[in-house]
Length: 154
Ligand SMILES: [Zn+2]
Image 1 (cartoon, rainbow, N blue to C red):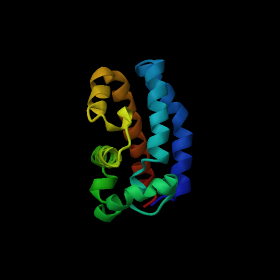
Image 2 (cartoon, rainbow, N blue to C red):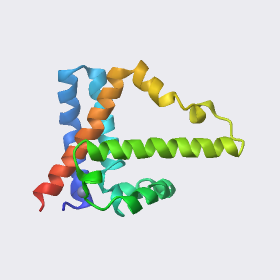
Image 3 (cartoon, protein in one colour):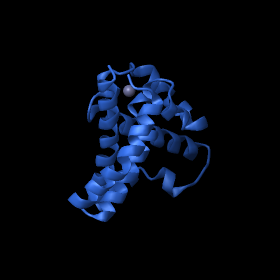
């Protein structure tokens, strides 16, 4: 298994070539979105959120939201370290946490339309399909880089 440092180096190394590749395949806007999501995916939404790790520590005090995830997902299982499945579970988990926190904030009287609107995510997917696809490609590509580094270090 590659170290957190090796994973970070790989993400930072591949960020620019990946962004350029996506820009050439689609367009510059998609390349920028996908590249930024590649960085966020690799540095904050890594498959290694299933253990105490550098990506987990980057969440600061908010890393507590990943405690249930870490409790449920065994390290390097298919639920965290399989292509597509791992990313889908992490993003779905984050969306569920987002809604739970929104509901909690609403219950204690905090009014914020950005937090509370349950249709926000579906609206984003519906109104910005190309940008959403670019974001998903970026996050998944970072996970694939992570998995390749893990596999090559065995
Ligand atoms: Zn890993």
